Image (spheres, rainbow, N blue to C red):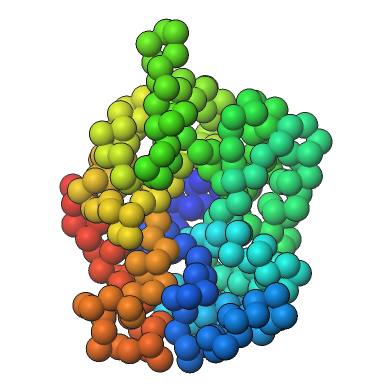
Length: 301
């Protein structure tokens, strides 16, 4: 049995790509060749047509980026808001990504305790039809984390220092011992992660750390050497390759850097405008390739 984290690292090294492609289908950004804007005038009545367009869009993006990434990350909110049709599109997206040999990191930030956490794990990390890993909220403690790690072939990415501007409202609060909340959470996750370490030295319990906080990112890499990082905030949110360099060890392991809008909707950027909306997948492929190369270029491999 191969641990999730070892499988992820192996696929990353085969592709020589440390990027994660988010599948966040912002309806207002999708090409009109895929999604008729008229459908958005009454989303409630057009769930099925919109969900079908999302699935088609995702399949084209996945096909385009499959050579440049090991993992894709659907953000569940974009699918859940379309009800049953949206969730069907999500599962079909997962199946399609699997067919292309990609791992799936499902971004739902789920959490609860005891049997309810276990039910979430069974729902989204099902061994046959589910994702390979799931983002979770660690603030309910250990019994809200370990149910997601019972299957060693699956992983969980716990929120640690998130990329949003207001993350400091809670995460940067100082505790009585002088440490910040995110620092104590990091130490807690590091201790919990020890039980789930694979042969790579990294753990199936991983963490989410934003590219928008490079100083904290470097600090957390030192503080938690066995935690693998998912790093959002690259591109559209302002993070760049130099900002994420500190997340990696000397072998180029330790993190995947996520980009969603910057790849999905690259065709809308001036640098890719020659592709046009109909060739959005070609623009996405080039954007993914450039991101992969940009990140590799700052690592001393």
